[in-house]
Length: 392
View 1 (cartoon, rainbow, N blue to C red):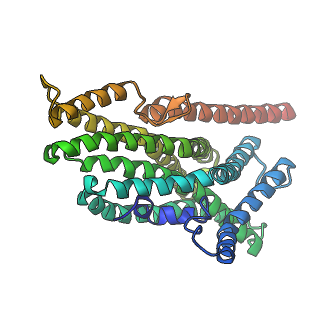
View 2 (cartoon, rainbow, N blue to C red; view 1 turned 180 degrees about the horizontal axis):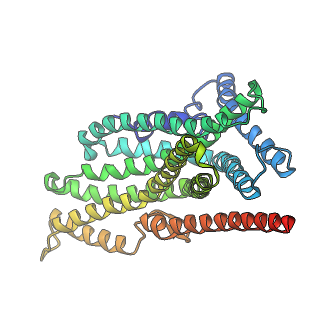
View 3 (cartoon, one colour; view 1 turned 30 degrees about the horizontal axis):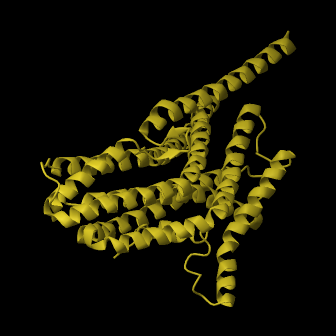
């Protein structure tokens, strides 16, 4: 029987070195626990150290960004880099703060599924064994996506800038920082989706009456786990959503600006860079879509289950048999669920669903792009005016 944590495969195992350092260490002897705990924290200590140092260096204006021909492009590059650094730090400190609740939640979810294993049936475990391969593949693709992005930036360094061991290691750390943001997003969204998928396995037509009564208890406990998932994970999703929104804005800006600014003699370079920017922008939007679909997927599965319960409900005239007790409890449960939120949401601010992406997030993306382009146009206009005044 695969738990959700095991179903997520490498996506969850990577979190042992990123967010839940003490996973499965509680039963170890003290010395082993401390040694393994320290070893697991080494990658994140290095990443956070570099991130903090880079943010300070950028703040004091000591980090070089190559050509200074365009102040707007340089500013956008700074924004892009700072967002990755700061988001990596925010995610790390957020999950350090939530680590005990995170570990407790994983244990509670595993106990919950063991308790209701006979109700969920073998179909859930069969589907999870297939999904595990899918999530392992996603873990590989996330690394390749972030590697391609930063490797192209590394190759674009000016010739006078030495590609030494220190700069190479800096880019490796940058790849890990960027990938960490996406790994957290896909881990959290995967956790929600796999847990929501469990509802598909329930076949009400084949359940005896006493099992239908247990089903209502199961769903009540299920919703309690969902509320705990929401409390632990949603602000992590918010950090990733903001990060990928800014990243999509900056890559979209470079897609337009570089194709406009570079002369036609560099058509091969323009085509390559435009392709990269296009893929990076699509990748950022895909990550945002993956996040915002979590709420819709959960609501879809929950509505389907409630519809099945409603369809199986029968009115009775008496209240003396087991069937009547089941019907009465079904009514109570359905009335209760009507007054509770069935959506994944960030506090009391907004719900995580596709509306958030298409109506709000993409609107902000377009607004950011317009602001960047207007600054660039103003910069070009000022340069032309200066040249004309000099010639005059």
